[in-house]
Structures are given as structure tokens and as C-alpha cells.
Length: 290
Image 1 (tube, one colour):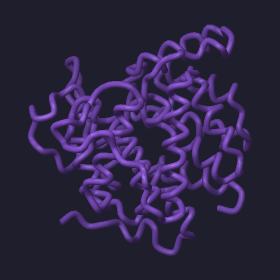
Image 2 (cartoon, helix red, strand yellow):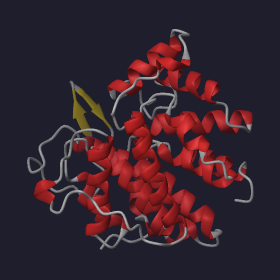
Image 3 (cartoon, one colour):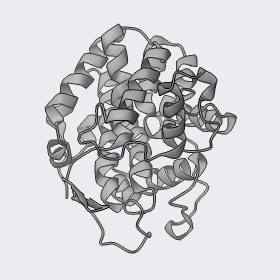
């Protein structure tokens, strides 16, 4: 049995604990899922802890996050610097990630998600904001946590879509962002979402695809299990877009269970953990009444 991390959430207000669960859940899904990304569903041993990633002749140390978490960190970085939501600055910060690996654990996974890469290349070339890729990809769901927290804490739901639209200005993705936001709304109240996955069994789960497929894959794992850890393992061991499924699962489960539910061994294995811990604390401390 993997021990939970009571010390990480002890004494925190409930809202802050759920926000931290969402942020760390996103990062952990990225870290745990990356080694299994691009693998067939049953073509790998069942993973229960952090693993190295071997890809294209390079090795990424265990516990490293990739572009999923780096994009979220860019959004947080912008808000912390400016103390306001400025999507133009967020876009430029995201473009720095795309160009030079800014905010990455290592310069790895930059531009791996096509819609994000193309949109950010347009931003970096100082083209119109309308250049955001009209794609059904999942990139803005992977990194939704800081956008949702900003919208939830300020009571301005428009923020959720404004930040998503930087890279995914597409009605299909907006619909999935709205749905994920509704799931998170319920979980922030301690209510288990009524939304069910479109997949009724592991065999039927599509572990690759668009934003809808991967949200449904994460929902399948959330509804199948009754602890954060068991659901996370069910999610990332699907393979395919494992890091994406894991990061989406981590956000929706982290909001429901809170940071205290997350295994302390996973949290302590994250590279540059102290840096992330300080950034998340500064981010949440800059929000109203958190």
C-alpha cells in the first residue's frame, strides 16, 4: 500500500488543499505517464513508481516533468510576475517554452503536442492572436489546473477559455474545457462528478486521440478506482498518450481527494520539487481569499 501524504496538506484550508491536489496531480500524471507514452496498452510492465524515460537516444531521469507541466508553469509564472491575468504575456511566456524550453525540468518534450507548437510558433513570430491552432488536440486540458484555479478563485469563468484559446481556439476544445471545468466545480465542493466516461472497460478505452477521448480515458480511471493512487496507476498504465491521460486524471482526482491523498513517495521523487512547491505557494498566496 502506497502511503498518502498527510503532512503536505495538514492544516491547510480545504480550498487550498484541493487546489494543491490539482496542481500536483497534474505534475505527477506527467511524470508517471511520460515513460509509458507511445507504448501500446499492454506492451509494458505495470508501473507503480517513477521511471526513467528513454526516447530518441536520450534518457530523462525519473521524476522529470515535460511540456505538459512546463506550459502550466508558464501560465503560473506570468500571473505571479504581473499579479493579474494577462493572456498576451502568458502567450509570450509559452512561446519561450516552445522556443527554448523555458520552465522545463529539462529541455525535453518541447513542442511535442502539435496544436500547441503551431500556435506558439505563430505567437513567437508576432502574428495575430487569431493564429491559435483550430485543433481538437488535448493540450489545454493537460495544463488546465492554473487556468481553472484563476477562474474559480476570481469568480470569472471566462478566464478558463481565454487561457485555453491561446493555443486551442476551437469550439470542440472549448466544449471539453467547459466539461472539465464542471467536473472540477463538483470536486471542489467534495461532490463526486456525475459525468461518466464514454468507455465502459479498459479494453475499450482509447488511449490516444482528441481532447474528448483523453478526458474520457481519465474519467474511466477516476470512476473505476476509489483512491488517488489507484486511479493514477490505472490512468498512466493505459499507455498511448499516458502522460496526457495521467495529467488530466491528476487534476480531476487531485481536486476531489486533495493533496493529502497523494503518495508522499511520488511527491518527493519529482525533480526540482522545492522549486515547484515554492512557485505553487506563491501562486496560491497571490489569489483572493485562498
